[in-house]
Image 1 (cartoon, one colour):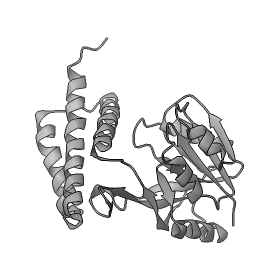
Image 2 (tube, helix red, strand yellow):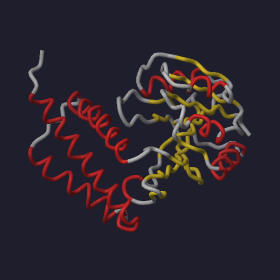
Image 3 (cartoon, rainbow, N blue to C red):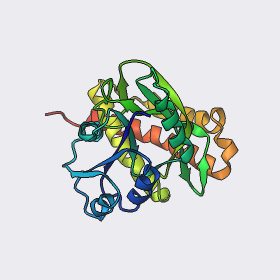
Length: 251
């Protein structure tokens, strides 16, 4: 099998980092790049990681590319501290790379644990994203939110799942929505997008219907309803913040 370097970027992830590292103990190398945590993240990471570097925050994509640049191997598996690689996914990675694949990167399905259950519906699932890639042919873009890997070449898809422990509770979920909608609104504004009353009236209910009905949130009971409503709220708040930006006087 081609050797694999796992990269993880962190900031105040003492609650999660040990379990994340344990889930990739099979890898040939583990690189952690920490953004000046004020908790025990760094000391906990040093117990299991091959290399830990502390670096001031430069943005999601920049931090991840920096981590990949520190790796000894070209195949990179990038995970977040609140994610876990299942044994099934680890086996599929090993078998796939052992077969000398033609693809330059591979998508992974992510499943989120929230409100007491795995959410296998709504916009959250299967949530495919490139996480395993050959750094000679791929790198992270510099989007301030929802960054992704840009690949030159074929992209395959892996079996198995990446488990995501995104939120401690609903308050944490709301805090995350507030932060991400602010980043998303600024990105939209910089790209020339503008919000209208129609956006606020149309996008939130459409988001709810897509999540709850078309993508099966109804199957997940009350948690599915809550996630669908929260995703609708995300849409509303994003456009409301964009509208607010439009009203601010520019220098």
